Length: 349
Ligand SMILES: [Ca+2]
Ligand SMILES: [Ca+2]
Image (cartoon, rainbow, N blue to C red; front, side, top):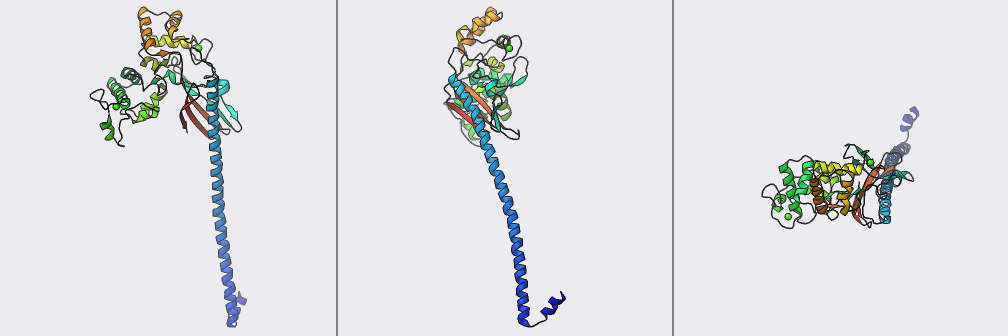
């Protein structure tokens, strides 16, 4: 240091040379500092980009795995020969072997849904397609059918009546209220938060229900597994759940007898003692052979059979869930297809 101080006291050209060297040193230090900082930022960005791309890869892979589940189900539906009845016993729709934890490289998919046992009240995962023909078609159902369904889920008589009327007014072509008070057409929806109009044509997807007066997320969640927009309005007696059997107008006693017939003595679905109705024309006879039916019960069942029941299914909902082997990420694809495998609905999440 003493030498430098001493040097600074030297001749002027020498001091300039020293100053220039010092400036170059400072500049070089700044450049190194800048480059180091830039390298750190660049490294962070690159790592972030790689992680993003890996995430996308994983997401795409999961999506494709879930799609494989849908394709598997569609292939089985197409292979199925048409017979006079469809039921939960059909191997194309209810099959652990082909729908449970099917391995694809690092991923696996399962096709199924949580099903409620209508006798025991217990819920279990069933590796099966959902039958849209076992649900109430909200495009076809009368106000009375809709009201009974809504009453089953706890709505008061007035609430059920108003919601049923609002659904009918949403789908009918005119702008007249079906009941004077409590229903809704254009004027109600125009004054709502998002200002829209009644559709005045059929529901195309079930989620449209959320636009109808009186419907909210909570109620929709309760109802969505019992309603459909697909099919001709006929209900498959082999796959209809308790709320649907109640909605078509059967008494609690008759509902219990039909469920007991289908579930068998063990009160469990998918077991050897399950029974099915083989054709709509033989429903009354087949139930009569299995349980005692009074004359009035035969009349009651005959009336509902003529109006609502079938033993065939035309649309199926496929819920396919793909999971990474480390179980950290999953993706679900839901699709509704007809018997030819034609896709009517598709949702990824
Ligand atoms: Ca209307
Ligand atoms: Ca059983």
